[in-house]
Amino acid sequence: MNFINDFGISVFGYSDFSSFIIIILKILAIVLPLLISVAYLTLAERRVIGLMQLRKGPNVVGPFGLFQPFADALKLMSKETIIPKEANKFLFLLAPMITFILALIAWAVIPFDENNVLADINVGILYLFAVSSLAVYGIIIAGWASNSKYAFLGALRSAAQMVSYEVSIGLIIITVLLCVGSLNLTDIVNAQKNVWFAIPLLPMFVMFFISVLAETNRAPFDLPEGESELVAGYFVEYSSMSFALFFLGEYANMILMSALTVTLFLGGWLPIIDVYPLNEVPGVIWFIIKIIFILFIFLWVRASTPRYRYDQLMRLGWKIFLPFSLVWVVLTAGFLVFFDIVPKSI
Amino acid sequence: MYYSILFYIFSFFVILSSVGVITSKNPVYCVLYLILAFINSAILFLFLNAEFLAMLLIVVYVGAVAVLFLFVVMMLNINIEEKKSKFLKFKPLSVILGSIILVEFLYFFIMDNSTLEKLSNTPNLEQKNNTISLGNILYTDFALLFQMCGVILLVAMIGAIVLTLRKRPGVKKQIIKNQVDTKKEDVIEVVSVKNNEGA
Image 1: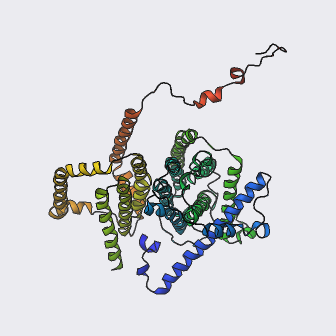
Image 2: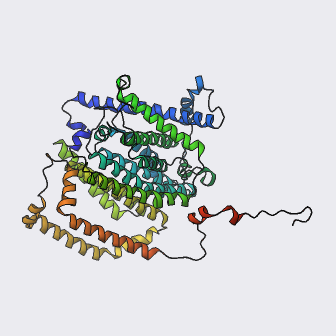
Image 3: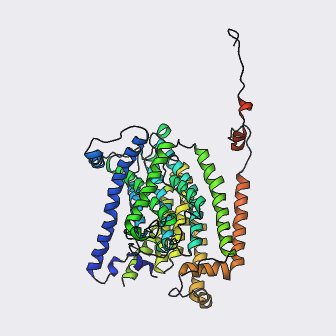
């Protein structure tokens, strides 16, 4: 019940030193694999898009180009950190940190398996929603602090875009919550034991995925970066490690949003069908396979769709997704009440 | 013990950042201080076991309202010196207003214990999830009041739209329906031109 205890914020409150160490080790066990997957996601992106466009992609460094991410990281770290003369130094350096930290702290509540979650809080989904709505600050502060027109325009685009699509994401999450009766992510996955929510709520699943593309500033909604008209958008003035933090944060956010999609709609750690050889596979493996599947669609969309125009993007968010998801919330609520199958709260 | 130390740390930051909101010269800093104040008060909600309210505070105020504030303030070109002189001009008025509010709060919380007792009638959080308790209060006990608040907000929203909506002539706007309804015959004319006679 007690959030502070559940969350492990009160590191001083632990009865002994060993439980404090255990928490630190658990955090490392989440963050390190995450950072390695971010590194390989960048490689996968270049390889997959390359193959889709009948190119080879990076295949020279190491076997199949597997050491490419490390080569990139070393190159980035050896670069000079440049801070523009007229920039606001404090905010300029704060912005990449915000982006990166927010992309990491959200993982605290993601359930990897039954009873395998760092902080099993009872408002888990709201926590994720709150963290993802804070992500816009890293971008908008970066755009303003750089004191550059291109960065500022990119930041403004991004802020408007993320705030718009958050509305429909929120309504879609409400639809799922109506079918679960709890805000806890473990309960959400357990409620999908009979059928994954992607099947009864298929339109919501599709809309959620498209909104996630907009929320993470990915193609076809990557207008904040818009290299053809804004150079590179909000991080045009960044170099070296500060750029690397933005880069890592963006990709960690992609993985996070895929994990959220999997948890809400694809049954989290649950196997595809609950039969003998499949349900012996550990839940973490299923979870990772599903995340990789969603990430592949991210890359697929990027390789195959042209970029939206900004007014089209806003129209899609406000005039199509918002009314449609709102109607779906009302329909779902009406359906549950009419057939008297409203899930009883715990 | 540890909780009270943490509580005082976060309350200190709430007060510090609230002071920052009204004393900063740069309006962007004001909004950033405001965000810091919101986040710290959300953490104070967590100490009261009100995690739903805490998350809601962050989602609504930090994630949406403050973003729009920041959005507008960053686009304004405010002269910092000018802002400072205005701040001092309103000093007597703000001191009077502030002291009235302070006296009211003191009366409310110290003198008049009966209202406080009514307010402290919170549901037992040990037995019930606080999301559920809040839902019961809002949507069952005070459903009518809640809907009235909703209607007032709706009126305010419509008012804001009516005030800012204006039809400007000569704006080129894409009308999706017209574009989709366009047929090949409407836009393409196939002309067979004789040899050496075309324009």
